[in-house]
Image (cartoon, rainbow, N blue to C red; front, top):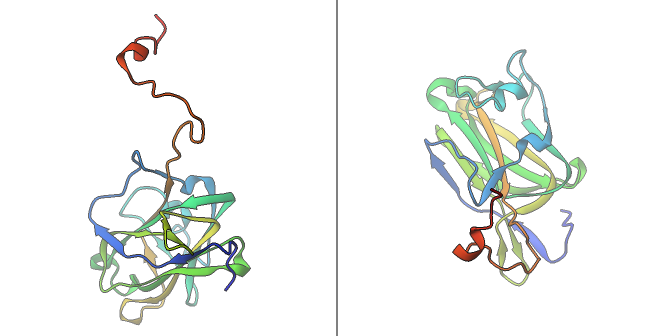
Length: 197
């Protein structure tokens, strides 16, 4: 396994399951639109557009041999803190993923597994936190990567093709003025000058 930076290694962290769609907030932003998405295979009308359309009734359907994968390639190294998938065993049955691997790397040849997940009849949103463990024992709440790959290793009940209904990629929201020592401009004396009259 190739580790780009000798001071850290990626670690496996648990996932959370929710029925509410994960959204951007003060701590995270959705960065999937900044990437190029490719699929190992897809049935006509069930491709990347359906993975990213925020519609839980559409889905990507693979059309080939396992493993099936989604590759997300950024144009520069990005901080990625969460990968969120919407899966629906109730509708998709044997098309639903059972064993998944999330891999990261600077190129396709050096991809390294950072999460292995086994799900039993999943339904809802599954959010997988990606963290980096430093050699001194501390953690960073993200991984720095150019590529992310979501690999479907096996489906429920040994199904052949797969359905994934939605995918979201989240990165940490950068603090404004990070690294600069600006004073806090939120006092009443300063905020009275925040707009031009």
